[in-house]
Amino acid sequence: MKINVGSIDRILRIIAGVALIALTAAGIIGVWGWIGVVPLLTGIFRFCPAYTLFGMSTCPAKK
Image 1: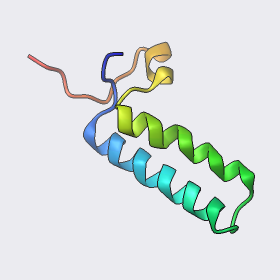
Image 2: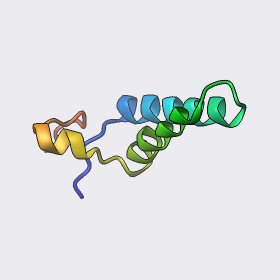
Image 3: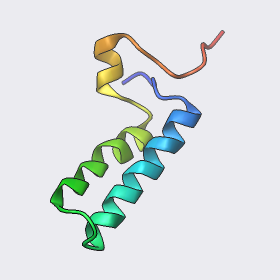
């Protein structure tokens, strides 16, 4: 797996994932909030399969 998630993207994914999971655990939103696991994991591992499919990357180019 090649890293394709940049720093800002990573932080936003982790925050969104944790927020969705917390809201679900608190009973504020339904079970669909567990979808927050996806952005959380993509932020932790810095790899997004969708970015690979579309040929995208938010990481700065390494020289």
